[in-house]
Image (cartoon, rainbow, N blue to C red; front, side, top):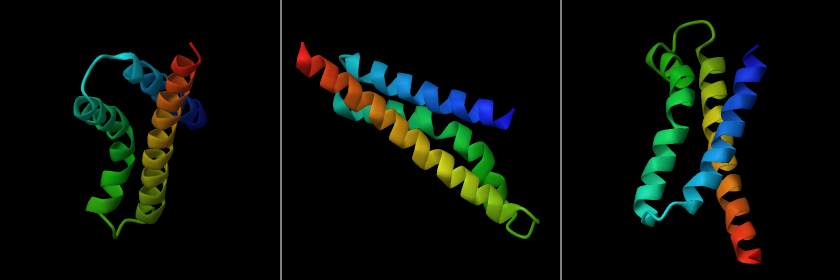
Length: 90
């Protein structure tokens, strides 16, 4: 079940990157929106590991949170670049 949620999160970030490219917003607003989209889910895993480092699986929580953050940002950027390449072909 956690793998399904992880896959759904990454697919949603890919779609969000695709959609953000098509909006007529300025670059700064797009970057702020992408940060607001990517950060919440990894922070749910990352913050407990950072707040209570003495707990048994804190290092695992930090690793999973940072990995989700990185992969979410990469998927968002991948969607953004795929939409940019498709727009270039037209």
